[in-house]
Length: 530
Image (cartoon, rainbow, N blue to C red; front, top):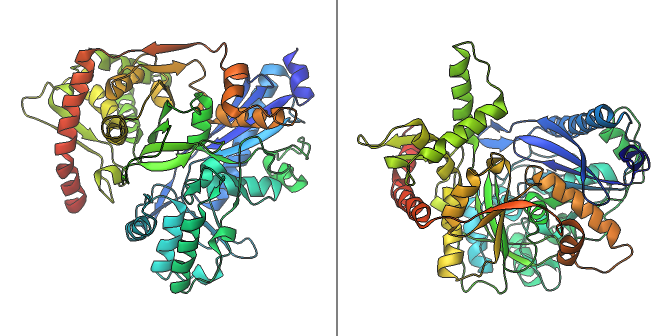
């Protein structure tokens, strides 16, 4: 079918994902093929000691990303988007958005990157006998109550970014179960907030003078395939400033970037895993059974259809690596060379392949913020080397590439070596894997297992969100499960590449990790003194 006709008739699905440094929209046809992409770059800010994105920048970013998509469609197909078949909103998981009864934001958006919630997370973990990470929404809520922040009595709703954007566009206060699993622990059997833990939390809040029911303060849970509302006229006007877009588009439940990443890599079936590596990094494994005991390094979340997932999450990923690449670009400009950014990344990444498998005595910590896996509440980007180290560009780049996945490897080692979790396949996606055969090779060495990168890996979570929109449309006429639908209709003919690590590469990464673990004390001292 002619693609212009597909767009004109709205036989499409739109996924929009709010990432850490980029908001991205992916428009697909009903088979999941990408038709066009739009982007909007943004950055979080450290204000009053907390990482945030201003509310007006959230709105501006939503409109800007959609405008970029419309422009791409016009340039590629000479048509304008007026109809859509489905929409799914996705965003960084966790964090804290608190509103009063009139929908007024009570405090600046607190992102997943904030680590000021240690006291709350520790107390809740002990109360539930379940790991509650610092970045989870329930940790933020309980911390502001512990701190007696002045807005607490006016708090009527607490949610996450995807749910907030979804509310702006549909008027529905809802969240997908995958994103909900970063708000509060989930009962995967009954597909709801865990009732026993919720009752314990209610009693705890009551003892602190917070008399509202957290189950209604948090958004209601929906699962993949359910319809979560329709685009309102006000939502259409907010999204499309030109006024072309028609209201009434059905929305899938808003999801977190973990859930859309699982969907985009076909890792929603037990014993499948995926790694998303970008500004933050997380590795997920869909479990066949629960963990044998509590591990503070491991989050328990869910797939978009509610299956239990163990997640190793690192707050810090490629931010410091990106900063170094930018610096090299500035150095080239001194010689009158204006390097293409994509080419610069590719050449520097590929240069790392000639480095030593253990990085030759170099070490880095790209900690822009705290890192719970290594027990640090704050971070300082740090590069160190031994005097006798093999200090080359190849080893320097390899060190920063290794470091961007080192923290998340520590969590995965618990699953694979202590819990003996079974892994049939690991799929990777995210910016780290855009340069063919580099980040993928290092991840395979880190995991000690083959890693596959699909041709669609560069589109990542926004494409996964668009797929969830398509699945919602499919469920209107079929009761097919999400894993079966992905296998049969999306990934049956998808091409990709798989890299199996050598023994030398696995051994080299393990040697690097020995240094990484032991030198965390240097990073902690940098935080304390600088």
